[in-house]
Length: 392
Ligand SMILES: *Cc1c(COP(=O)(O)O)cnc(C)c1O
Image (cartoon, rainbow, N blue to C red):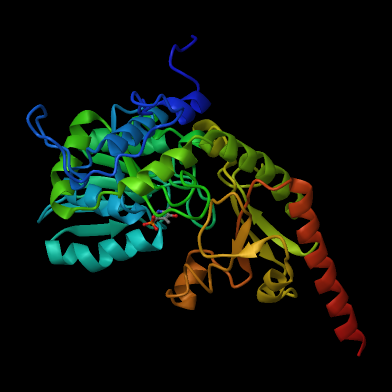
């Protein structure tokens, strides 16, 4: 069946745009007002109420991309996560959380939930039983993040929706790594989609923002909390994010294409012990990823063989920069053991499958031959050094 709704790139470019009726400019004007006339509207326009013209416009784009009725734009991914969680959880409630989630979300739950009397359990794994055994009579929310960081493990969205229906839970997903280009969980029945727009949606490593998409009813509930907590995004940044999102589709598809080729190249390299990329047939969750994703993202991790010093390898790269964040147009790399997962004990890192030689790789939109050439020269330089050291 052919759908009448616009294609994804048309949504990126146009949905939610504001018309410049005064001057007929081609793009959304930026309305910086923090004060508006109030006679003709039910909720007066005010930046903290998430309803300035630019905020509302961009919410529509996010909602359309996520196949949802409504959206909200936040000051950060963590604002989106915290506001959404607190909208659906109160004293005495319990939430089941997937084993590995973004570190900031983990800290939020562990450090803040006890203050509110909200209980949580992390699953031991990704299977239906892992989730099912943690559900209690007072469980209200089931929270997942797929693909996971940094091993790109996949959670079965149909299974999560089945459990949510059986136990009457609200299902939430952190959809940051996939982006709505590669995964639209609402199609499977997930209730609430959360994004760090700092990553793919922004895509240029210059914006901190968050977004949520859901039904009108659920968005209203998040809004009720949001107006009190105050985590909305400044219109200037909303406008920049709208501009960035016009190219979300073409950026992510280019990153998908690059990543698939580069994952294969790395997988075949003798100094690489293992590649974690859901687009590879050797990935344990490849079949599941194929079922529920439209593309395999630009994110991957790989493990160097023990004889290669990961720090030295990263220092030897020229085009690919060492960088904390991800999903920009530029390729970046980091060591999870030294950065995102540095606060975990070595035992806990091992339990999560994060070795010291593991590198997380965010593929950009550069020409793939140049990315591969950079990896190649780094491997060659390291091999040369090792040969020299072994002969002295
Ligand atoms: C970065 C990130 C977040 C947090 O987003 P901020 O914009 O930094 O607050 C949440 N989830 C995932 C998967 C992330 O990568």
